[in-house]
Amino acid sequence: MEAGSESQRCYEQRPEALGLILSRVSLQDGVSEPHFCHEIDLMKWSNCPQQPDQLDRIVQMLVTRISGSIGTLCVSGLQSDSIFTLIAQNASCLRTLRIPKSSLSDFMMEQLAGRLPMISFLDVSYCMNLSARGLEVVGKNCTLLEGLCRNMYPWHTGDHDEPSRDNEAMAIASTMPKLKHLEIASHWMTTEGVHKILCACSKLEYFDMWGCENVEAGKLGLHKFPKLTVWGPRAYNCFDGGDNPSEEMDIE
Image 1 (cartoon, rainbow, N blue to C red):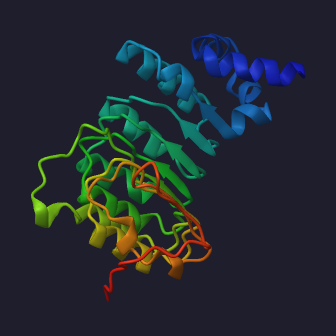
Image 2 (image 1 turned 60 degrees about the vertical axis):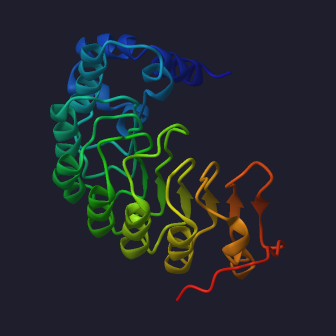
């Protein structure tokens, strides 16, 4: 393994070490490294038990040091509105944003989405304060969006009655026509909501709806989408262009 790859892996596993290094070099020296100019990936480290203030401090240091030059930011469990504000202020080049398990709310997404003009991939899985309202804001502002992850916890069904279960599906279908990659594992949306997404997002290539207990795959008419690979909703369901499930829905 090359030395550069070893050092990158070290920084991803121990970002506090990278933070210490950056605190001892000038901004010009720090951003002269191509590695620093493009990607902050703290996903593995942030998924381990952390003190929230420690996580915020590391993210704040890295984002500030690489100001305006971040192409990818991956970190789990952000809890502070001030961190989301900081990300928004430095997001002009951001293309991939993965912030699962964060406290991101609809209100904060309204502040953030307008500053994400280049975003093509967004992961807001397990963000329990986010709703259809926030997703709609994303779709209307992030017009280059091609990938969305909105996976949920298997035990979480939300406080949703039958009519409101498809609110997020409607937000996706009505505002994200360029999606190619979509993950909604264990989401509460229904067969009708998923079918709306399939009809509206004609460029979809990969659709993960594993564990969506309210979805009946056999009614989706998946054979009409020959370029689409679908996982779920149950363990025995995996469809591609060669499958021809029965009992399809006819939803205009």
